[in-house]
Length: 181
Image 1 (tube, rainbow, N blue to C red):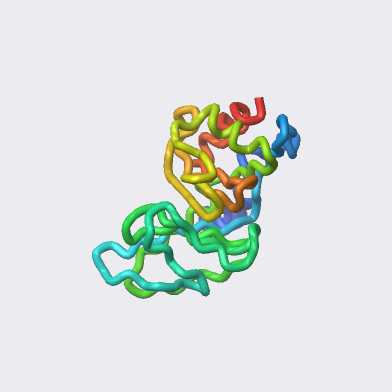
Image 2 (cartoon, rainbow, N blue to C red; image 1 turned 120 degrees about the horizontal axis):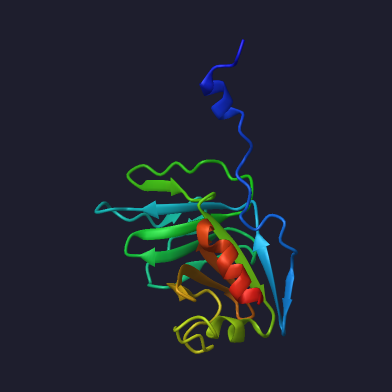
């Protein structure tokens, strides 16, 4: 007797990265391109309600285009993406966030995070982005929503030679090929 359709829905494997099977890392002149996998990405929106100061040990930035990264470059981070809106980035295995009065949407399987690291990072980014990415305007801890090669991205400067590029998963392969090519 066939199993009910509901049982089949829950037996599906976890989504695969659109970059699965791509040779990693990609070595560029003075930079390395990799994919950060297993992250939990949460979009948090306070709406018109009061804005909390902290969520899950992260201070929520109130200054535009800044972030809070209390531990290390691979630890959790809170990225300012708009007034009363943040992208929270957690390493693998984080429990669901309880945030009364806030809208929390899990984007973990809707986004890919590409990491560019090395002294050539900014040259690679400058070829496809119109933002001023000089040390004076975009140093460690800064973040910004923009477009790279016409693809919407969220850039996060982890340190001056390391940048995480958050990209919608449907554009991840295209952006990878443009950055690595």
